[in-house]
Amino acid sequence: MSKDEVILLDFWVSPFALRAKIALAEKGVEFEARQEDLLGEKSELLLKSNPIYKKVPVLVHNGKAVNESTIIVSYIEDTWPTPSLLPPCAYGRATARFWADYVDKKLFDGGSKIWRSKGEEVEVAKKEFIEILKVLEGALGEKEYFGGDSFGFVDILAIPITAWFYAYEQYGNFKVEDECPKISAWIKKCLERESVASGYPEPTKVYEFVGLLRKMLGLE
Image 1 (spheres, rainbow, N blue to C red):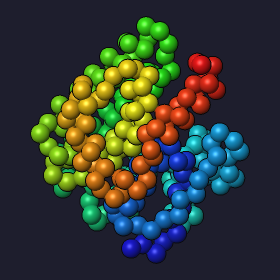
Image 2 (image 1 turned 180 degrees about the vertical axis):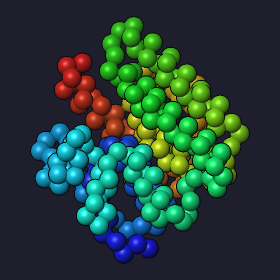
Image 3 (image 1 turned 30 degrees about the horizontal axis):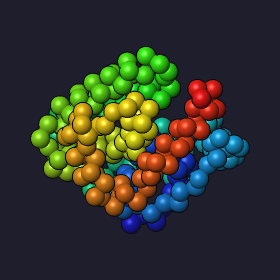
């Protein structure tokens, strides 16, 4: 267990902050999670630690701030190398980083297009999101996790976003389980892990939060 000072600036519904919490838990690193009010007044520590983007997560390790969730998970992997979140071989690591990049570029934004859309645009956004899931389903194949038998880097980046899937389903009128059963099974498998389940927000609460965002954006 780490004796270092590790602080995570968090927001309960943020899938990106959850990535850091899962990675720290998998490594057995003790940390203090500090909730931010992203819809209200942000803390001085957040503004000082992330002056460019002013958003969570921020990992403050012995007074030094690390920003952006994928970078934070990589930092956690480098700083606390055991147990490893990446495959031992260079090719395996490169493959994991490729799919991590795909998740970063596609998954959350693709899902958000569904609840941000109106009318016929919703159907277009839904179809695009399902295609993204099918690509990931192909990458998962018959494996339990994206890295094979071991829960790892790509799983940590992707699983927090699935807490938002219920909201996507409600606004898009579809079921992930019907469209991509392997992804649905992978989600259930990941939720068996304490590191995931302990910080995973209730999907119905995420749906309520998305409704609030829609009102703030004038979509309702």
